[in-house]
View (cartoon, rainbow, N blue to C red):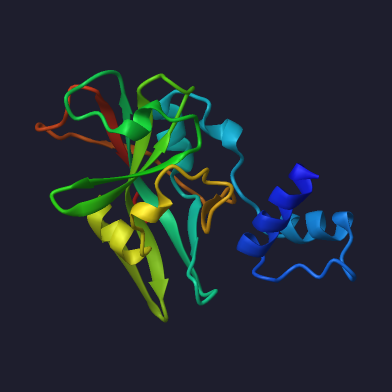
Length: 196
C-alpha cells in the first residue's frame, strides 16, 4: 500500500495527470510513468568522475508548476570526492539525492554519488537549451539553476522523485574534454565538458 501511494505521487509529479482510481489500474500507471525515461538512482552509485562523464550529453528536465517542461543537454559537470573546507552537505547524501547549496549568493545543483556518508558528488555546470529557434549555452552553476528555476526547496530530494530529473537518452557526445583550472578546491577531480 505504501509503495502504491508513493507511485501515485510520482505519477502526478512526472506525468502531470491526477490519478483517477476508477479508470486507472496499477499496470496503467506504471506504463504512463515508463513513457518518461529517468536516469535510475543506481547510475549515481559510481565514482564521481564516471558519473560526471556519463551525464554529458544527457538531458536535464525540469517541469514547472505550470506543467511547462524545460530541457537542457548537459554540457559540463564537475566531480568532487573527499574532505575539504568547501565540501557541501550533499556530498554525504545517498547517491542520486539532489543538493542545492548557495555560493556567492547563487544556487548550485549538486547530486550525491557513490554511497551515503562518502563525501562524493557532482555539480552541474552548464547545459545547452533550445529557446524557441535559438540554441543557447547556459554556463555557470548559478546561471544554470536560474534557467531551471531551482531553489532550496529541491534540496535533499531524490532526482527520480522530483520535478527535476535526467533523461538518459544521449545525443552523440563526441570527445570529452577536461577543463584546466588553477583555482579549484583540493577535492575537485576535474571539470568535464563537451562541445556542441
